[in-house]
Image: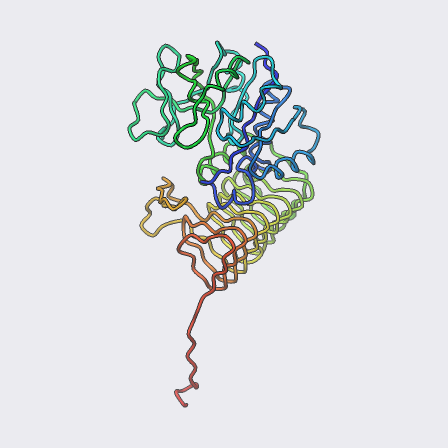
Length: 419
């Protein structure tokens, strides 16, 4: 079966990925040099799709601006459609009804997956609706399907009790145009959205079980796994300059980037016009964006750093996500490991979550500045456009647009005790 069209659902706000999503849709979070949505469109292109209708809403201008200025190597034809007042996956698909008259795909715009998964779905599609499902270690974080003879018998959204034989819904679907009339009969869900999952049982949806890579970015620390996978599957690139430095591992070095008197170890992406060094140490699966300065005696370990970030002097950034236009004062330290070696907990939307990670640093939004010798404790989040003063130790999440200063009381006396 030949399917040419795809609907890419990219209207969501990604509230659990704050503060990164305060200033961009989650589909525009940059991993391994490109936004998640760009990586996804390349996968669709490789699988033979010719046209993508991108359904947008939240901060849609960020998506449109990026793709308007994109290198023409992306050959799949794009058309942007704004999702109107109704929310949910079913509402997003329905926005494209008048554009499509043959079999089509619908896919979430914030996932990382493979060409093989998309191709498998196209090949095995049957009936009005087919979905991709997958076995996952922690299905409680997702909606899941119970199958019978390869078809969905029951679907539940993040229940407290997980049946043993359950498969995660990957938000990758194949449809026939007849599905539009079925969508119009969907009622609003308990969370106020129109959900495509309401059709799984009534339409006897076929399930395609995938064993290939797939991840949905629902929580900030899941970005590390996706970044690792993407880096592992990129080819080495050397378009920049390397001066008196050691590279041990795979390096993707973009045009205009420089590495000076430094050590690179692991799978590392360094963006355009970024300077690393002198005496910097970059290790683990790390992505550093465009126009960054990683300077003297600074260490970056297993981190995702967006564009225009300065960490020039004696800074440590470990297992962290750093938004655009951040500036770290000399000696800024981001802690990523607990004294008791326990798993790091993080507060997301006022709910404390066990991240199941022994190493986790900070999640920092855009336009954050830190003063000299400031410190940030493991698992903490700093909202965009915040200032962290010199010597401050951050032990709790910081809301956006916040200035944090250290108060100290000074005592003065003469040397030798003479008043």
